[in-house]
Picture 1 (tube, helix red, strand yellow):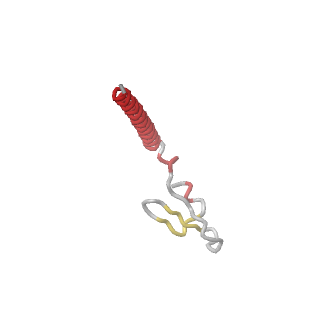
Picture 2 (cartoon, one colour):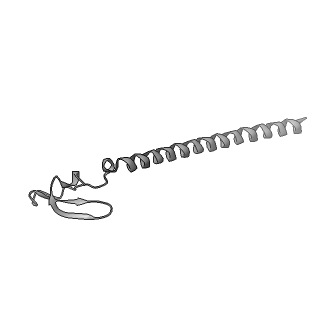
Picture 3 (cartoon, helix red, strand yellow):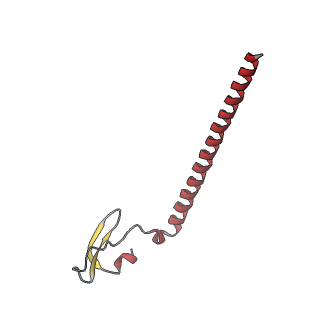
Length: 89
């Protein structure tokens, strides 16, 4: 009788552990799907409105350059441009 009880307890514990693993798997699949959906949405938005997703910025280097600033972009750096130029790129 003890052997039956021990096997039943072991199988119950195994079922609970497998249920936890399946739950984690489902959470990971859902999170992956939502992230991919967000990336696809951002890509479509960037395709139709490319100017709104500018990756260029003008770092604050100091006040010694006057009215000129540097613009840093992933593809190319621009040096010594008027300060408001980076908003138009």
